[in-house]
Image: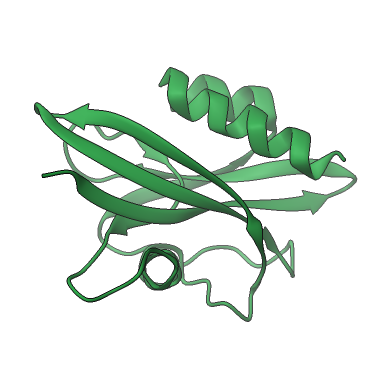
Length: 138
């Protein structure tokens, strides 16, 4: 059985620079990632992305311009179990509004593309940033 998750790659444009929101997990290897989480029973992926972003970063759909046609799905194994995570691209409407973290995360960073890719470390996530960055610049 594949575990499903969903989230948003949140970006902002501040001082003419594109920056991506990464959250540091308070558990495990304390990895950096965008807001995302497991799909609850009876919930669709998009609803999960909205719920998880609200819970983990404090941003609601009113805070975000969501590009519903811009998605990318990452597939990888976690402890031998297949996982599929769909991400939508979402722009923070007020670029000065900082996230409010849940206890699942210890800190956040807004980073330009290359720094976000370096911090994220995982190749598939680096590809996600490149993919969406190209979409933003079109």
